[in-house]
Length: 347
Ligand SMILES: NC(=O)c1ccc[n+]([C@@H]2O[C@H](COP(=O)([O-])OP(=O)(O)OC[C@H]3O[C@@H](n4cnc5c(N)ncnc54)[C@H](OP(=O)(O)O)[C@@H]3O)[C@@H](O)[C@H]2O)c1
Image (cartoon, rainbow, N blue to C red; front, top):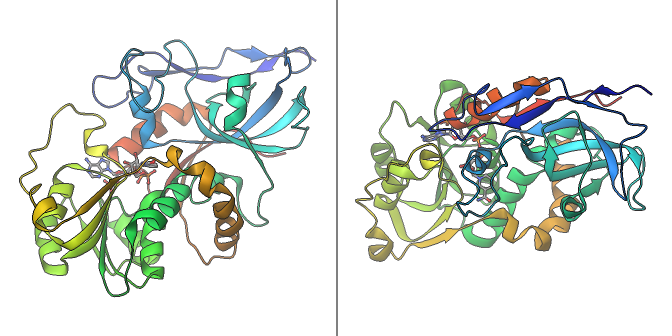
């Protein structure tokens, strides 16, 4: 067989602020692979089907020597993240042609040969009938696990109490809204556009507001005090939540997107309420708890999603060349639903 195209998205330059498609990442469609002769050496060849654009990927665009909870991307190499693909050829006894796999280490490329170091991150799975593969990157994937695990561990939800969720229309926020409603809470959700607010309502939120055009302070003062704050954003929104917390509130710190592209620190004028209200603030990283919760999550959640008992929404871009743009979209809020890059059809 002659070599075939294996386009890649290459990490080219550390962004100064927001990622710049074509500059910080470059689409290279000149790369090729020969599926007949590619050395597998105990690994396998995966056809990449769908990839995820996640906010945390911006944090990997940093100097290699700067430590963080996830390694930095290497300049000149393909970027990688959560993806779903299909095994097309295998030299590994645990994986066969036709297997569906998902991993956090999947290259933004058309084909991927995992290294031995990647094996522990790869999960083989049987898709739930009726559930698109892309959902295994959203509500049935890492964002869903994030919401499910941290809510189970830290929300201590009580019927009739008030929950506030920021970035409510994203895959994490949408899942949290539904968990909070399932537990009988009143849910306030914020997002950055009318379309997103409409989605938050569909997911079950009782009160929705656009944090760009309405005062978070005023909404929380009117609709709170809040017993659980699910924080996807940090910054002034978190400060407003501190100021409007109920006694013994639980704050789940999940994301800090206000600072992913900026060095400017927020002046937290309400932080003393942690003491005054005896707020329990829990920082959460999904990687710390996945092993313990994974089986329970996969046994329960894909079925609920396939049956429509749990809702999700997606924002799809078609073509690997859209990867750089997709990464920017989640940073600036252009995505409406879980941002997916469709790389190839599952044929
Ligand atoms: N701790 C963990 O283990 C873990 C795991 C997964 C995700 N996360 C974090 O959880 C958060 C949500 O993730 P997701 O996948 O559901 O993302 P997402 O909602 O699909 O995308 C991020 C959203 O953040 C909002 N945003 C961007 N800049 C903002 C700003 N300056 N102020 C307020 N909102 C802003 C945008 O929506 P608007 O249009 O509404 O502004 C954007 O669509 C992210 O911060 C992510 O890093 C953490």
